Image 1 (cartoon, rainbow over the protein chains, first blue to last red):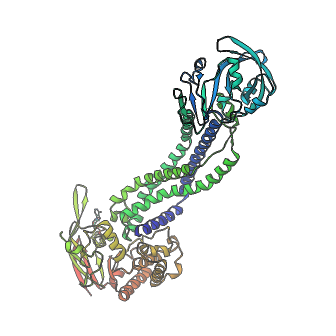
Image 2 (cartoon, chains in turn red, brown):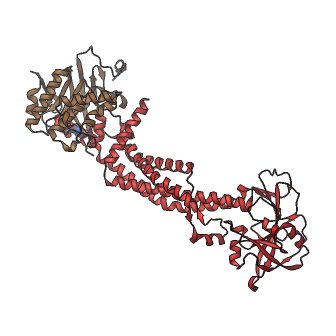
Image 3 (cartoon, rainbow over the protein chains, first blue to last red):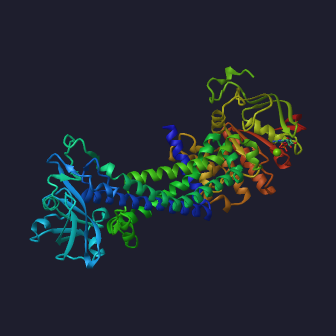
Length: 391
Length: 244
Ligand SMILES: Nc1ncnc2c1ncn2[C@@H]1O[C@H](COP(=O)(O)OP(=O)(O)O)[C@@H](O)[C@H]1O
Ligand SMILES: [Mg+2]
């Protein structure tokens, strides 16, 4: 109780001392709040992106996990040829078969990945019911990116050529039954989706798949010789990419933070030097040196307290608003998607309580440490000399 | 320096002894370069409760040094200083802080008010460290300001008042906690004679009516006029000790 009361007193005094000091204080506080807002802004943005990216990739591509044929490696297109095989049926698994093929839009030859997925699947958001509804010979789904790259629209038919299981080439027209819009470029660019049954007939690969999409109830008892990767494992690359970007942005606010911390350090050095008479007076009035040290440390830390309050008043409404309207990513979207990065047209920043409290914690702790370093000297100060105000 | 018996019941002022301050064989040396300078040598003094005593002597004779030792702001190189029978030098930082906060008031030549705070808050300051309610504090502050005749400027800042007023604020701050001793180091040195007399009148009245023991250091004749006991220091030694 006693200590609590005393800490409250020190807070009051520190606050009074700091708000009574001049323009410099406010410059430091402004810099620190700006750094604080930027930390929250960039990290919320990447968290939002990450959250959207996870949702999109799980909903469109990865499901809850994938059971992958042991010979297939998604990073190595040469493994497509042999990386498929018969699989055990499981109510919680949805098969996908991949083959290489070519299409001929406008007379050009374009190599593509032909993917077969059951038309009645519901595990991913691909609008495969369009494949069922279509009366065409080979109805196909493509992504908007693919459609734009090759000037394709719904109803178009184009020639497709592929190898069947014996290695002989076949060619038939496919009909675009639907164009889907997704933020996940790895199921869009250079890919054509058709019904798996139809694909089995076209290739002669009955009851075969390249990988199987798992739902939440899949318990890994079937297809044990295949490689199971849960969604976290599948998202690993994406997580790494976001962390990389996050790290890149830290440079921007890191500099501001550094400037603010140097300013705090500097004003603390100045305080200990210039306010010796005041320090002596505190001691004469009954302060212990420890308490004076605490008071001065708190004064430095007060910059962080005020900056986080001011910063929160700006950042919380701003980020809540941006969370609603989103930040348009127009300039980056095409380029990022060409690199296979999942990104929406808009990123909706996500300020989590964890990010917020972590940021406040670190800004305050760093400022406290920086504030304490110069004022440690008070403990060794001679009270009589301090009272005279001499060095 | 074995004073174990004095360490019990630390901050309770013993009423059985009449000597509120006892200075026993006190020597104070300061390091100066490679050597040492003896600022006080073998001082022995007893100050009774309620005295109005001054240390006088030329500049550099050791007046301030002795007051600082009594106020536990510094420690003697040799000897003991007893406040109400308790050795102040052996106290911890926390205990000597408590002693200063509860029992000793300081008045400085240059007032040492805290510029950020109002007059009221400056006077209230020592009480903030004590367990007193806001109402109790307010009453004590207003009473102290009344003693020095400054109730009407309670809300001003130190920068808005004159030197004479500032020293009266410092007096209010030193007595607001009802201390046993007030140590006043050259309290009139920065004041004109009108203000010097005004201050001394106030201090005299506080001594007579509240029974606070006052110990001055001064070479101002206006101060000396008021003193009941004059201790003359010269080169760090007591040269004369005279009670009027
Ligand atoms: N911290 C110190 N270091 C060295 N010498 C000091 C120190 N403090 C005081 N002195 C010396 O001690 C002597 C007494 O000083 P002081 O007590 O301030 O004298 P007075 O108050 O009587 O003018 C002076 O010669 C002064 O120079
Ligand atoms: Mg002096």
